Length: 202
Image 1: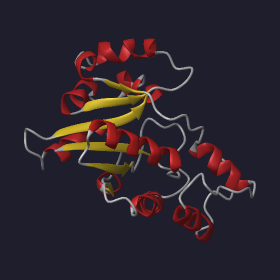
Image 2 (image 1 turned 180 degrees about the vertical axis):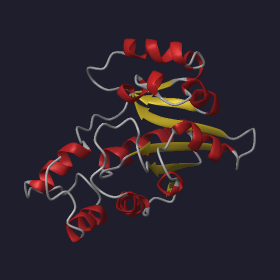
Image 3 (image 1 turned 135 degrees about the horizontal axis):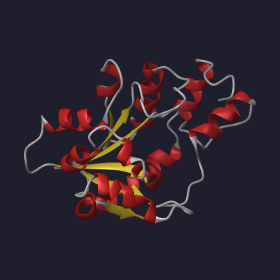
């Protein structure tokens, strides 16, 4: 099997996450894509505003209509900081040697690889799939390739549909009482409203 992994704080998950995952699923021939919300993202300066349980529920609501998408709570259940290397090792434990993992992330996130916990182990366990973004040069990956030499051989770069949507903007819109329709799935919009999430901007 070829298994895609999309991790993130998902505070909240939005349509760009879903479009990128579906595009990668189709182009890479993935069997399915796992969406894994982080529990305690140790590299983030600001902690998520929604709780781990709320972020997990929003992911579940966002992916339920796609039979190829699945939400996984492995990081939400884990106590303390969550590390990608640990999650990949956990997933690899249930797979055969022939199964492949494809970890999806933005170029800017991949450029932070030298700061990650056990960066070379991360690349040993998966094939990173980086989405190109306007204004982000591939030169930013040089330090990442030094931290994890396998990256030069295993990295997959993908051009993607240009979708200018961010969780930060969505939170600000909610706090200002503006519409987030079509930026998030309808069920996620309803969950945010019913649970009064993001009432103050951050």
